[in-house]
Image (tube, rainbow, N blue to C red; front, side):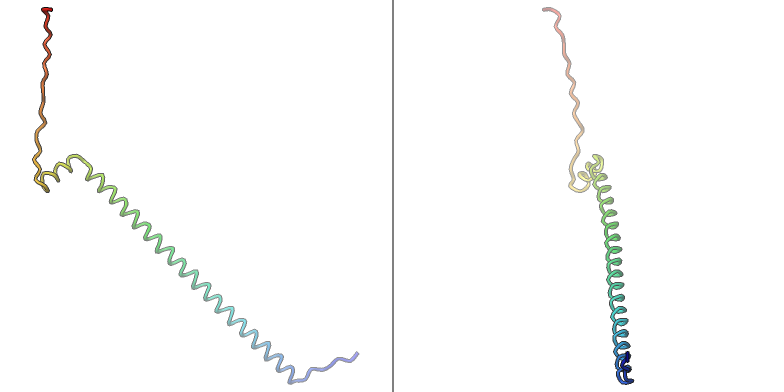
Amino acid sequence: MHRKRISKKSKNIIQGLIFFFSTAGIISSLIIYLWVYTEIDETTLAIEIQNVTLKEFENQLFKLKNETELLSRVDIISKKAREEINMIVTEPEIFQIAIYHDTKN
């Protein structure tokens, strides 16, 4: 059996094509890697921002609950009524009811 020899020109062309496609493949792989890395980094940053925002909202909610509890106290309500709208607080009236039992009947 006699094998055909590949000429130097054909070898150079084949080697050039292999080099070109391997270089293009490596560059494409690096570009895809960088794209994926950038997407993951941006997603991680967005998650961190959302976590910080969540903690700020929880803190604001806690402050508002405390303020609501403080403002719902009776002494604070009466103080604000006196100072802000000049409301006059009256003293409560005490009624005494006496029941006399008639023993004549």
